[in-house]
Structure formats: C-alpha cells, structure tokens
Length: 144
Image (tube, rainbow, N blue to C red; front, top):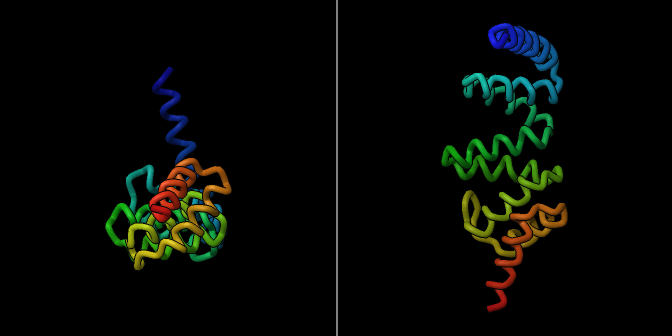
C-alpha cells in the first residue's frame, strides 16, 4: 500500500514539475516561486535560486523574502539587505522584521536606529510577534 502511495506521489511531483515549468517559462511569477520551492525541496538549490530570482525580479514579495533568507544564511549581507528591502516595501512582514534587524545590527547597511524602528514597527503592525518584541526592546534601550 505505501509503495503505491509513493509511486503516486512521484508521478504527481513529476506532473507538478512539468506544469510549473511550463507556466514559469511563460513568466508567471507564482509558478516561478512554486517551481523554485519544488526544486529546493528536491535538492536542486542552484536551479531553485534561478527561479526565485525570476519571481523576485517581477516583484513577488515571497520570492524576494526567500532570497533575503538565502543570502542571509549564506553570509552575503548586502544581497540579503537588497532582497529584504524589496520584499519589505511590498508589505512582507517577515522581511520587514529582518530588515529592521539588519538596520539595528548594521548588517548589509550602516546601523540606523530610526530605520530599524520604522521597519520593526511596520512588521509589528501586522502582528509579527518577534518584531513586537524586538521593537519594544530597541525602544527601551534607546530611552536609557
């Protein structure tokens, strides 16, 4: 029974890959994002990044935040900052939080507490719990 389920899953992944690829190649940013995720899960990180970049270049904030996280983990703070900023400007709350932290800590940009508070506040306004805590902590430290 499990073997048959596994075979069906493999078939559906291949089908998904085929259809997402077709749509992605025609410029659909949602398909590019989905294809990037499928490839990433399949262990094809380099190819996934290509599709995340294509979706991010079209303004897909989820792809932009994904790229920000990738570059932050890969220790390229300047690129992480760039992609988080783009996603944050599109209203992505996690990217706003990460951008606030980058301003606070001077990663990929000079330290700027005013900008840090701005982006943490925008994220907190969307009920991002970590942003709420970071904002309170930063504002408290500046009052001391």
